[in-house]
Length: 292
Image 1 (cartoon, one colour):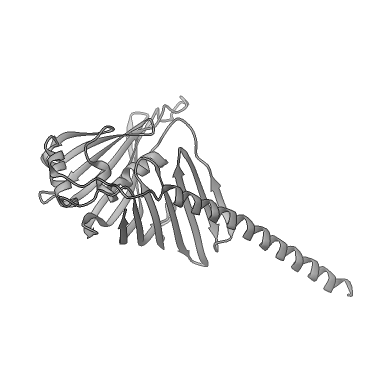
Image 2: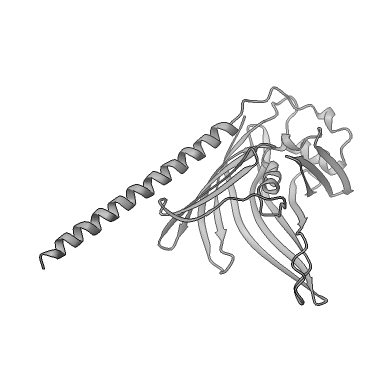
């Protein structure tokens, strides 16, 4: 019986040491995120929007910029966003409330942090892409590591960082103005395609634009590399990441999507049959936006 208090004390000491270790690693991660945030928080642009640069653009693109940007106003180099909304679980019909803070510096990278409420607590998530490297971290209750991921490689699929950064440029419209590395193509009276050269990659986005210049839908598409030629398996998959804009809002003279739905889809052919699968990932609202 005399050993029981000793065992309890040892267990409590070990638990305390474990908490200290978890707190140390979380603190290191927080410092790394803060470092990336500082690196990407660049100085303000000294350029101003001149509508004359739109003269050669397709009509839908002209309408988009005429609504998004105000003549004579500074062109932002960086945007900071605060968002709220819901995350949709892919394996269930459950949704989880979340709040997001994000910093985007087009062509260079982004830092993304979220707090997701779950049934028994909360999950914190952070993701950054800067100078060609990416890291994601998830912590349960803000302390216990849930998963860790570091993404590298030659193939960029719709979930990876460069395509995600390209899609997020709709929150910093100045980054989509015509310049080296940004090419616009006419599709029809309601849509246009923009091709972006980002860190030696080319990303193509299709933008659907209303008659008044409102951005309605943005789609990024890529085809996965050939899969293993196992009998009965699909040879390749067509994947797309899509944002459907519900409404927009003007912050600091710049108009950006304010309420939107993020959807991911796959299409493939197997044994002569066509398959399609779609997921709603996020429903979000931009609460605040700061341009620099």
